[in-house]
Image (cartoon, rainbow, N blue to C red; front, top):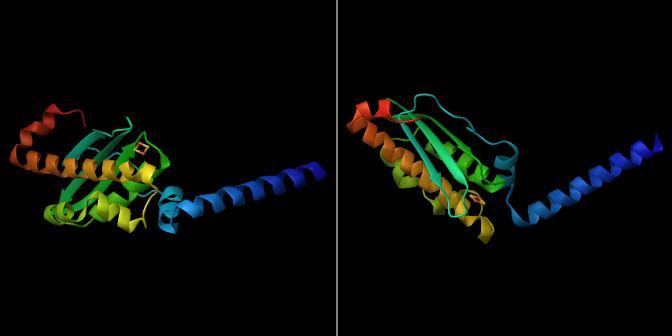
Length: 156
Ligand code: FES
């Protein structure tokens, strides 16, 4: 019984120490998106879709649904690191309820980094991957609008 208590105390102290170290490098916003990622899901029959591979080899996918000329839904998936999830989560939140043009003007890696309160240098490319993926999905929206028949010839 005593050993169980010691083990729990040790695990709790270890977790506190890990979180303390994480907080030295990452903002509360980053930690929030890391612990509660938003829009981490595939959207069926999207109006825009893109899958982009980053320089590290990780990939991100974005799915966009438009309604009344605004982004009504935006989801993402990734096989990348925790920071990639954080960046995808924030980017999809930024996109929601924006018009195509507003989203294109607003969302880039600098804005994602600023909204997250910055990232350590080795993680900056994760924000670039999220920005590039969402911009490619927006470009796909435009392409589908011009040529709706293309929808029937793609994977998603
Ligand atoms: Fe590759 Fe984050 S480490 S995208």
